[in-house]
Length: 448
Ligand code: NDP
Ligand code: 2IT
Image (cartoon, rainbow, N blue to C red):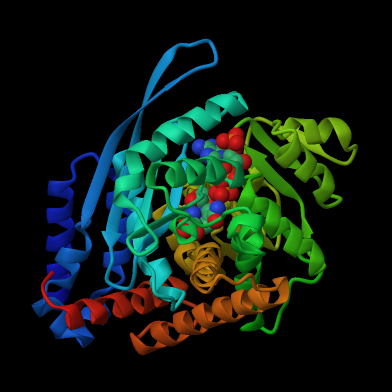
């Protein structure tokens, strides 16, 4: 009882100190609410104020990012890097370029990243960053100038042993390339390990691009296996049409599942015949066009601007676009439609009420910090290859990714059972397993 009250007090204090940061407070609330049994079993965590310390970032950097459009107009955006926890290794986490990026958004992402990175078992701390820059409709030259200005604001606080950014929404291989070039120019060093998601010829890793989507599908396979089931013949709905969604679809198709939806901010596609991956890749990766193009070129598909992919009855749902994209009503619709598994490709796509609805309905619900950890896990493998100046084969990286996703699944199941939950409570399992690894390291390293 005392522990529960203590957690509530910490949540209240966190709300008081971070007014208006609704995404951050939501992420903190979900994690802390599940930790009461962990604190009961470990009074030493409470004595050392582990929770009070973990909700406070070690550093938060904010900087001006001025750039010029092709017409010569000056624009000013805001850059961020939150360095949340370095207890397990250098800060590690992506950069997001999207108009919705705020202090609250980077802090929620950085907070989640601490526990996600801990679950991978690798030596990486938690961080995140980005900008409220909107890349849509910008020319290649404008993207390059923006990335160069962003890196000029960022380069002093990152480094292969300090903080290692990567991609996230709006930041892919092209942006990482421009930022790496500018970092190298500013520092005069070829520090391959300062960014991950690099091109293959200059320090990138095979399978990094595919890793989040592939790992997500691996995690779903592990979840289904607990019910003696697999993905063969299963229908799957996804949101998003970016890095995560595209490579989840690729892996689903390889395993004989049928992905039937994807989306972007203009609307969503329903293709009951199963997604034509080559067409999707051409539209999104080559033409950088909107998803509506797909329905114009594929007769089995329809394009919708009303409703969402969660209106379609499927076996498995993989929200893979952004935060807060599945609310309580949509969760009820998925449950009613007979969905067996929901796993988060995106960070925090399911609202807390939606998570509760899934768990109460007894379906398998995989939270993002476990289900989408494959991307950052392969980023850590990329850092390892950079340290060794080696390039591993595709098979080697993919086998390691599968092993890591299996290990994350096992850690979730075991931690949930250890702290009084059911074997399929992946929320308790992921939070408890990630948190205890971080908390034990914090205890060992003293009050810093
Ligand atoms: P991308 O930028 O490659 O793709 C994002 C996709 O989601 C786009 O189709 C985009 O549409 C859509 N989207 C983004 N924001 C919105 C919005 N507000 N409303 C509707 N659609 C939106 O990003 P990623 O695929 O890399 O990231 C997707 C999610 O996965 C994010 O939550 C990210 O944090 C998470 N993630 C990513 C990892 C990675 O390795 N890349 C690792 C782990 C998690 P549009 O282009 O129209 O904006
Ligand atoms: O949310 C995430 O885990 C990412 N965007 C990937 C971070 C990384 O450092 O590879």
